[in-house]
Length: 391
Image (cartoon, rainbow, N blue to C red; front, side, top):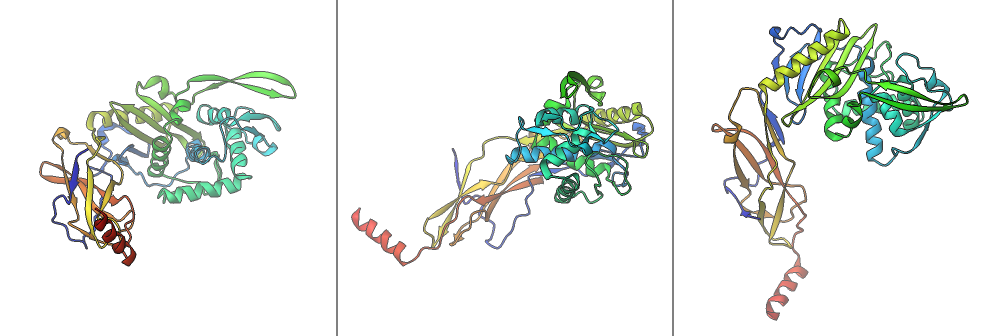
């Protein structure tokens, strides 16, 4: 591996680096020529979070079952943290069984695995399964909703307030197309395995109750899974107040897009609007991702127990273009401190890697100290002197 020592030694020790791992062209409003019928819509690229097109994207509206994206996100959070496991048995309470609306007709006392519950939520938009999982994770739906709102705040979902975990019409249960895109992005980028479930078209589950055992068929509520060749999910929703909503995800040529439609007047309209946004995105967008192994950066340290400190790159870099730029022309430049004074703390910024296109910086990622270098003391210098004498 190539080693870079004090690259581009033009930065002073007091300089800070605002670096971001992703960057992109500025967002633009949705174009009338696309014929979007829904009052609120957004198109976002997943790896960068770039808003490609938008239409009233921050208008607060009821989301119906698109709410369940957050429910699924918390389920996968719990799985990743080891709090629950796919094979765990989940018992349906009387309350969960009473939900109504879209459901898979779980009965009180019926048990299903976590994985089966995920299928019921992701494919059939089951309210009963959503509440059963909320109770399994948090004890009560109310406590689970507190977790949903906390997670929303962490993601910067400023237009959102959840009242329930399934999306039934309730006063004050509101979000926006932008916030739905944010939580959709978090789910599909952090837990891409969700697509294993969101792309199921039809599948059977087995009900085992007091009445015996019977098969029940799940059919995906997201018709884009069959209608759009690049569709990967994600979630539909419809109620009398919310009308017809969808967060549609798709992937083509390594570009993952999220098209959110809210309050469309009819079910066909939401899918037509989502398709129009996705087609526009794939016609306009090209993505640069730097997946190369980067060279090692080290910076000399004065007065430390070590003579230099290694750097680590804080993430990987992606850039989204919507203007047809030649992304093969992207150049990289490394910068590092000329020297550092001990102590150096792990995670301290010691340089940056910048990306240049057509003579302009399009973004950068910080280079951080990979380890702590303590200030050398008397004992350390005495040990060095002894080692020198022994050579």
